[in-house]
Image (cartoon, rainbow, N blue to C red; front, side, top):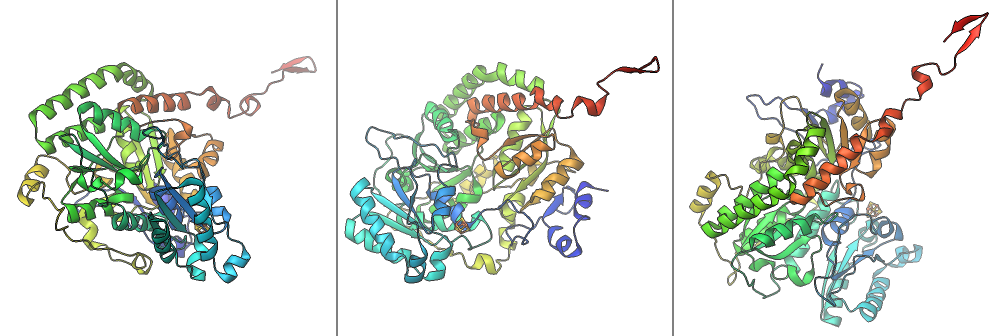
Length: 534
Ligand code: SF4
């Protein structure tokens, strides 16, 4: 019996009926493998998912350092999302504002729920303006806001008028959609409407890039910027790790968008393509091989022999600096297996980094990915919107009269794609997985435990909520959201850090001590009636 079937047969018939399409063991047969995703979670099943507010404030808009992001609601949402996601940021120049260490909240009380919280929100913003003078304010709604009818967009418009700054109200109440994913979409819409395209500062160098869907966890974005700048690219803006309002305003003037996390930012990538003609390239800077491939695709996109040669020069130099360490860790890790349950992109990206060390990822799961993240963008037209996703606004954009600039014609794009350049597309996770491997959508604690028992990976990557239950079962666990407070893991130097961390985890002596010695052999020796009794 396959591991998927062993897992599913433990469910009641009702739960089985729902979950059977969310767990796929790859067949790689004539018919493409499919999965159901982005649907409502079963109540009480102990999902790992978060909410729409977490996707909007926690993931996409929160990391912008020069913006004051206000959590409008009771204190819990602001407190639990304060400093817990490691989206690092530092001022890029002396005097640049950086509000990342703070958490701003209207701290609503019962009277605000009864009489409305708009006044308190506006008073709070007055206080923020006096104390911090930000150029931009985001207001993120939590659950009660939509229920009591506070109009955060109207407040934002009043603030803009009063102070002459940019203010955006995000209606990202936690109950919207089915997961963090709805919040990503709402955040993308707000940034597209009011930030992207507002500036006019043109890039100074020949080739310029935006990095989309990179949140600088543990410094990942800085490592990517380091390599790209070494080759000679100008980074106009990063969405949004260590990113800023000041740079994002000018992002429409860049030559090419690189997309790291497809799930959280593909809406902006697609809208910028339509409005400004900027192509987007799906890249992956997680993994040595994947980083080299991404750098080569970027250089080939610009089709400049000098740039291509410089790219090869940098790759050769970077590889020479890390190859000994990578080989050493590979000798320790080769042949081991892994499971990865994360949010919406890493369960794919990290399979390639693990492969650099000779490891295979036999279980991969997402909390809130959509079918296109598993199966590729070609299936988007087949996805039927349900009642939960219909609530999330789809905005349509059209080519900007003055700023639209077609970089390549449709035929040229097809020719570039034929050369293997992954332009304006994403093939999803399945093509990088082997037959028999298991993919899970909206995994829960029970499924995590059961799959670990049946498939026995040597190491399991997931989040803080299940790390300790996995370790208590005697299985090595590493956090793949927070990197267990380590990192960066991206790029060339990140691959070395990752190899070091997982070698250290797997070879920790404590794993040999999880079974007490008296469970394996008697500890006391003695004699009964003069006979030796060991
Ligand atoms: S579900 Fe509602 S209350 Fe909970 S964190 Fe999200 S916005 Fe806050």
